[in-house]
Image 1 (cartoon, rainbow, N blue to C red):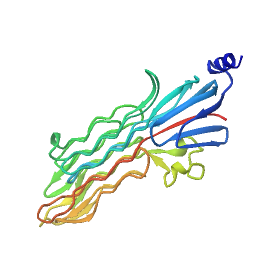
Image 2: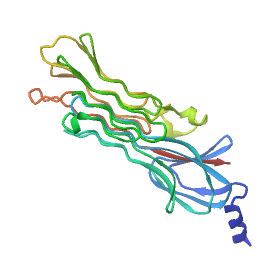
Image 3: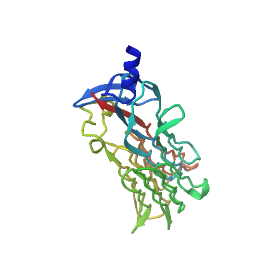
Image 4: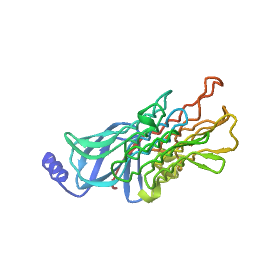
Length: 311
């Protein structure tokens, strides 16, 4: 009898009454939430009805050596799934990392699946461009990576809530790399404005409370220090030795990294890493063998998968 009741509930009864899995599990208001910040299993033990899943891919790393900003991971808003008494596979996309002499690493794909059926799949961001890789073009992904300083172009953006990055510029000894795309706006181009070399800003991300009004740090420790996810990162910039002018680093969207800055072979700012889910890392500054400066980009941030259902 108990087995028959469980099957009936699993086929679409009232609601889920027992489920496990997630790095943070909490009831807030009308919903119970399972927040996955690392890969794992969501298991429905009893009950039925439906539940909802949202997902964000991993943010990308910034490019090396006046590199482009890393792109944000794709954001898939809540999708309704019919509950089954089963174990669902949850994959959280890893952050893209920055490396010497390379385009920034792309973010990993986040997904939610049952066997061969994938309900949600969110691409990771595209890595920030590096001058010696594919003519400085930013990487393809969810939101795309910005192009490197040698007029590198943005990569290609794919999926829901994604945007392209900006392109780079090389003008009279003043260099600026493009910003990475964010989930709500595109990254901007690196430009020369008067005598100022400007790195492109990263695109804006998705405000957590616009996804779910309960998504605050006061409610969930998983969101500590975060108000926005899936932002694009800023690009790096440089003024050559002997060239007059100033520099303005590319600033990342909220939670993303900002670009590195170099004035005449002296680094004044290093690229910074992302600090929110699915956001990109900043593009690197100049690396000169004569000065030993560090042109490394910043790392992106891991993705996230969240399940919610009526408590």
